[in-house]
Length: 602
Image (cartoon, rainbow, N blue to C red; front, side):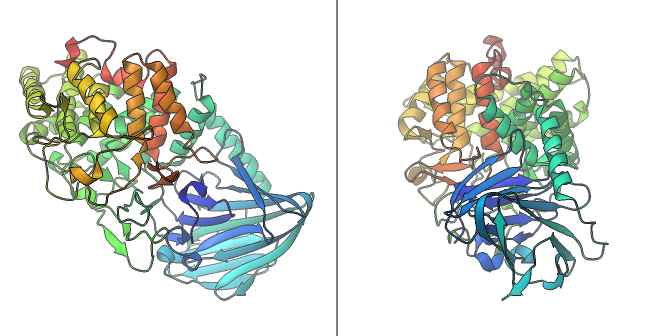
């Protein structure tokens, strides 16, 4: 059975990533890209679906950490006979993805075991394995993996295994390289040199971080995770490196998150800018421009790492799912949905990027075309922020984001004196605002609601003040937050909605969606309730696993992480909330316009 989600750590080369469990098993690796088929898929099945374990034979006490300022994982195993460290890392990509595993003897004598099970095509295809003098060669169709090591390796029952003893001062190394079987194999690397250069690469990158306030270690760790989730060749940021990790234990809300969502673009770019990473922010903006280029009617909410649009969803029959949570899905049908909020997200990120770069008219023609399309469709129902797989509705959050689209594009045109039908756009902005306040607000409840005509509360309504739709102290916002506090908080964490009543999903007892709790902390900070915001932040930081990683959701009853892991949006939210709390003008104040007075909300 695969490990619990919180028992995994991440290593990566900014083009793909692997998950390493506390027991020394790499249970997930897609090559050569984040969205490629996995060659280790035990995370979603069994050992026979592929894994690479390196661990003591005897029972061991396990501790682990990332080496300072890096994504280099160090796992220490302590047995009754001694102690060893396993250092796992992927060097920044040159041509081929590589994983190095360096074993160092620290004390006494420890009997070690290696079990390598290569299964291409998400755990389905068994390769032909050839033993070599210094490792092995595995081939199936276009896929090839080469293992180089100074330890003798033998075959046993379609596994490649090794046994060796580590004593104090000894070092043993493993290098696994993936490549196309038609190409010349990559040259064998030098593990020590690769470790030194990888350390330097990460240290140089971390040195650009300009945040030095409280919780700076947590900010740094989240920024490193976000960097690892950026597909280097394009700048696209994937939501998570995994697919189908369940939102409900043994449930069916299992989705493929190895793609780039537009929805999180603005807070992501603001987080990078406030932390000092202008290059990453600009690369993300450029990825957005390339991906949405074309007909405005065909803009999608998510794309592949290089902007791919055909992300058809299908199910894998031979994987039973993480701890039998099925189905296992590849692709994501949400790419075919209408989600109006993405137009607001795009307009906002373009506005924020333009304001930061001082480039007046750059790419305004793209924004113009998107807004002209939105003026024709903003009254339509959609699938909403939670990507409902049923009947479309007039979701309040979606409508607010259409208001954001007009508001930010108008601001760009006004500030940089760009040619546009501003008076017409202002009228539409007023119409949308009036429509939301009339149909999305329930006077009897004193709060905004999930969708027009509904009585349900939704945590996405926390974003209304954060995007500047109404001032944080507006009575309608105060009433909405009060309703969220009353109806959606479970053991200090904010749920997305009341699953049994909203009809958004039918699966029931999912975990708390972690970004929602960060949003509530951001709201408290905007209204001067720093102590309440700090209390939420500290509670959320305790949910991180032992190496500082967060998933999408948290099981408030059983204390386990849920959903795809690690989750970019959770780490973006963590960075932004900390910066919001400890700088004069963080991302929430910048996006909401909280310092500009009430005029901007009309």
